[in-house]
Image 1: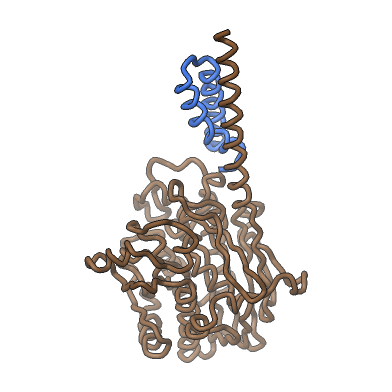
Image 2 (image 1 turned 45 degrees about the vertical axis):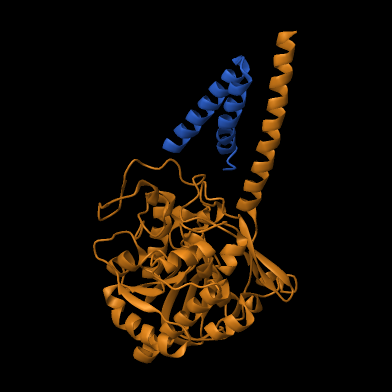
Length: 48
Length: 389
């Protein structure tokens, strides 16, 4: 059960990161959001 | 115009991220799904699964194969565990050599090659470990998954803030709730790693196992190295084995008592919670040393590292090392000879519970001919005699 909650949390954080990426005006922040987003997606896809 | 440029930039960054994601994802996927064939040797009479002993592990990644080698003459039963820590490959490879070569005349030998299979599907985060390694043979090479000390977080997540060991209630490092050598004797409703230990404890009880031998490797900066760690029930056997090996096999191995205050380890808990004698073997693995240089396949298989040699010159190591390093053949050979000596001494002492094994190379054979000389060719083997780990 707690594992499922952690996956939901990971998905929520991933969505927030994507929203921030889309709203960002600075290219440095955009790169940062994408770098942080990658491990969340890899976890959600159950690859890492 | 400005918005258009921003959109283009975001699209370019997204595509770049996608390339990185696919590239990394493929590597992780291939690592987790690399199939390792085991060519069943002439002595393998049955292949079971851990779920045959505890149904709760059925369908999980840790429902490991249990290779049974039963002799015609009744005798004792010994369980060998390879891959408790898959970042210590000599233990897995030694067990592999037994599965592909051993013939049992008396008693029963049980082998598990992937004691923590989940931990074979991941490497240490931030460690830059290779994801696999290949052993050269005369028919090409055999490739094995490189692993970690801990179960894959994909199979057991999240970790707790504090890990309280069952049943001792000793507080251990949080991450060690995924370390199969900290979760013995296990429990049926615990985490995957605890359930795996519980399944093996059930195996030990149901099969009437006399001795459990857990194969490991250690960094040279760790004081428990080149040794047999023995539960109090196995002190005599370990001490005698240490003397015989040091005198006959061409290498030295020590013997240490399992500390009573250190919980969750196989050499402690199996001896405490079952009738079996529990022993743990440690061979030297420079790859694990913190002061190592480049962490690659070469270091893993050859065990050569100038920084570790330098650490030795400063008296920081508990095992010798020189420019020849610690090649995988020496480490696997140590495990094979130590196992054979333990079997022989046990059989001399307890004839009615003995285990007589042939067909397995000793230290000198493996050092002379290499590990690959004792691995079989899956391409020419009977497909019905191949099992995948």
